[in-house]
Structure formats: structure tokens, C-alpha cells
Length: 446
Image 1 (spheres, rainbow, N blue to C red):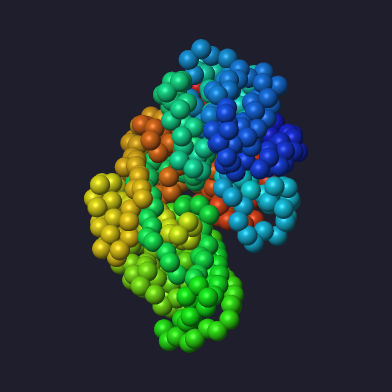
Image 2: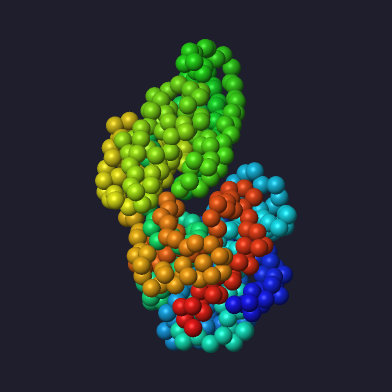
């Protein structure tokens, strides 16, 4: 509808301003405090957004700082739009302050711009457009804002225990046209005793390819560290305290699309810089440039979701142990227990202990459901492009919601640098997302 598009164009600067305020809240998960399980900043972002919604006449509720909702006034909303206000850590490589929204050639750059604060702003203005234009609805709409999507979605699990979800749910936490299939996910944490004079620091979150690996060595002959190991495996005596720092650089990417990055950990392992058993074992399991886990005995694929991914994303020394983390996305035709048995078996054979191994089964929603078909019609009508269903490796916010799908926010062949430095959403696509969501509300609830 042209009136929706006109409304959004008229409110473009307001939308950008709201996103700027939201990005300024550094809503990375923090230390748990009473009343703030995920830290104060995610809760502050939630309260900020709910106040904006309330100021626009929506009925809001904060469910104990886990998640919140904003409704157009119907007792039993039938459509839910699910976004999250927490963000991943900023990492390195930004051209400007990641918590200050900057505009660069039509791009709005800042942490959370595409994942998922920009889409949250677009969803809010979609509801505002429908409400303020007086477009009649027969069914209610609920915006749901979470605060822990990037660290396990405990927010949504809690919310679902306290409140019933609408029967139709989509999240703009993925890409268009419609994501109806998502690979299964497994996150494995492992460790082993570490008595070597090196400190390793690589990876801050398990679902992102690490962009750097720092190796700090301290050799003290008085403490028994009498030799250093060269890159070729040879040794030479050390007669005085020496310290050195080596930083291996890579390129960050989301763990579901590791081919877009350059893993600094596996690059380090492949270099042979540290010729000791633990590093040799990891190098055999995680070959640099290999992203499907074939060396771990995995490497599966299917016709719908494609090739699996298996990425060593964390490697850190702490408290006398070498600790690692692995992110795995496996195809729709495989089960979590099968993948777990294989990867954990390989790690144990290599001398590592499994600290935890948790995940979820694959997710699939019928592409022929009336709900999905409605979303595809809206996408085609607004964009003029052919709508279709796709399967991905990334786990969206609806992964464990029966019948849920991802609808946006990235468009085909677009890369907003999610989880990476200089993350962005274009102004054009911020508006287009809002228009598509508003049209979806009218299509489904009007």
C-alpha cells in the first residue's frame, strides 16, 4: 500500500533517531545481578524500547527483564513478531565507535544495526504505521523483544513459561524471502591440563569465527622453563627471562557461514608455531580452510539444507587448562545425538575432556502452510521478486518454536556484516523491512 510506504518515508528520520538511541545502549550480556540475569544493559535496552512502544499507545509488559511485549489492543494476539535487543561483543576492526550509529553512504553502521536492533525498530514502525493510519485489523499483533538471543535464548524459554505465544510467529532475525528450515546446532566445550609457558587467547563467543589469536610466551629458567621451541620443532636453551607476544590475524564471520571468514585459530594451528602434542592434535581435527568437520569424521550434507559446518571458534588458556569451543550446524536429516557422539569421541581420542555438549535438533516448518504462503505473497508484492523458502545453518530466534519462520531482515545477496566489525543496515532496507512487516500485518490480521 502506497500510504504505508509514504508514512514510513515521512518518519524516516525518526526511525534513524530511534535506532541511534538503541545502538547507544551497549546491550552485550553482562554479569548476572538480582533482577538482571543477563546484566543491566540488555534490560536497559528492553525498558527503553517498551517505553517507546507505550508512548505510541501500545499495551506493554516487561516480563521480569527477560523479555517484553507490546500489543495492538486485542486480548488474544494471533501474530507475533519476535526480535532481540541484545548484541554480541564488538570485537576488533571497527572504523568508528560501534555504539555510536554512523551514516556512511546510505549505510547505518553500529553494533546491532542488522542483528537485531534495526529490525526491531522496523517492526515497531510497521505496527505504528498500521495503527496510526487507521488500517482495520481483525486479529491482534504482538511485538516481542528478547534480551538473550545471542547467548542461548534463555529469555525466550522463560517468556514461554510465563506467557503464551501467538500461534503465528516470524522473526526478522535471518533473511528473505522466508527461512523455513534451520540446521541443527551443537556447541561443544572441551579442555585439557595446560602446563606449558604459553598463554593463548582466541575467540570471545562460540558462534563467531575468531578474527585474532594471541599467543603470549613467558620463559623463566628459574621455574624450569629452560628451553624454547622453534617453529620447526627444534629447541634452544634459555638463560634469562624472556617474553614475547604473537598475534595471528584472521577475518571474523558468523559461525554458520565460516567460509566468509578466515579462522585465526586454525591459521595458528596450521603454522606449526607451537609444536606440542595438544596443538598437533587440534590441527589434525580442524584443518585450516576446512569448515565441514570432515577431519573430525563429520562432513555430512543433505539436499535441502546443504553442507554442515564445524568450526573451532574459541581457544583460551585459563586456570591451568587449555579450553576450547566448537560451533556445529548439522543438516536436517541428522540427529543431535549422532553428531555429538562423533565429535566428542574424536576429542576424547585426542586427549581432551568434554566439559559440555549441548544443542538443538533441526527446525522445519511446512512451506505450504497458509502462514508461510501469506508471507511469500507479501514479499513478492513489495519487492517484485520471486518468493521462495530456504534452509540455513544459522539458528534464528524461532528455532524451537513450532510453525515459526524467519522473515528478513537481510535481503538476498546482502551482507550486513552480522557479528562482524562495521555491522550495518542501509536506510533503504530499514524502510523496506518496515514496509514488508506492515504489509504482512495487514495480510494476516486485516
